[in-house]
Image (cartoon, rainbow, N blue to C red; front, side):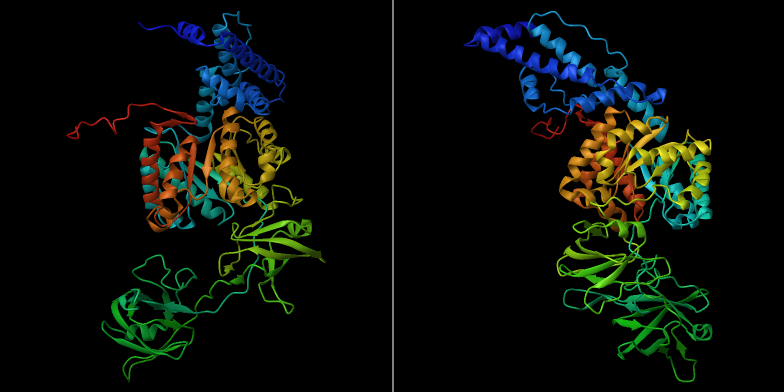
Length: 635
């Protein structure tokens, strides 16, 4: 015979050695819950928000009030009674507390004090509000998964419409265009390709464009030597496994730094670096020719011609060769000689190790820095002069996504002297245009730069959403809202990038101001956030952002380094697969660019489809598990 829950409690009470203890325990739990309920009810007052967020603003206030207390002991007591421990109440705080209060009253045979939810959402309304807002901002929920996939488009897609179509066909729901790179003509081409591919696929694909924001990066660095290194692939004993290839082209062709990179860093690994030579010499070459030279080290070397076509000549080498401009190339006597034409300079590099002293100064785009100083250390430019001026002794400074860290030891005459306290083992090398993070420093600049304001009309015309970088306070959000009002574009979707500790600390107030607009979301920019807060705190911070946004019923974009190794190399790490699975709790996941981005798309789509059956937000879904339901014969 199956007993009711009430009968089960009665049995426990009869068996208890001290029945009064259980009654006293229930009374204590009820008292604790009542205090929590009253604290939540006092938190109803909220600022004016868009009607779409009215219930959400109330629930957000309730959540902040609830999480202002330590509820762990109360949670344990509720769990022992078989009641909800309030651990999944984010989307419907008041409804959850009242439901638990009703159950407690039933256990004590006490009349339940009636409370109206008022403007607060019910259980169903809380879930529906988040789903509705996510669809309004990010587009319709994909088939077979609840989480959308966003892809950052690389600049080269403007020449590869087939790649955009492939990404759309694989399930890309949102295309991201970063306005910190390229220009309007490129953005227009990218957006046009996305719209055309979506039309071909017969589905909606939205576009998000990032405002560049204040540029806080290392300034230009004096370039390195103009040299190309050809290096064959070898085994651990130094024996050649495969020769290295290079492409000889006419000197009138433009050779960019990427294609002339050391070690064969061109777009096509089979071709390798591109080397310009005279057209007459190029036309004199035939399949099988041997090209003799003495490289930059005066080492005797040769190249073998393995392919000739209308655009150039492919050569192979079995030894390491260093090529520099002006180096003479010879074939058989009586045939014309050639010389290596202009080569791009290697990127400038500044070696840094723990203990080094760095002079951080303001730098404009034309000033080349990075040179060593007579007194020791080196000088590094910062693209935001206001940041250098705001530094104080004791402030932390991080360079290149936290690869290097230091402490300001001296501020003098427009410069800050930074002692490097953390660096890779054996030291590392800093490049230009690498991010600078100042977690202890308030930089007095507007979140919208002159460039951002100039870009905004084009973003309104091309995109469905705009992402606000470098958010720190509610005033930053108001600034963008006012700019959109002037363009009559308040309906444009707004995504707030949370990438600083300052923004995290002000997040409830930031969300309240953002909710004055109709379509709002949050991006967890985990790269910068990890540098600012420390990698040890990243997991904690991203969880709290997820909870707070669920309480406000605002969709979240999980960003930075999702399947990054897979996108770059074609092979994922085990840890990033787990990270991708955890990202299912957000409404959208962002992939960054990389040569293997289609493979990353396929993998992420598969992971999200599987995880959709197991998890929604913090709540596990108990679908039938057939993994262990096998007989001895495996059936």
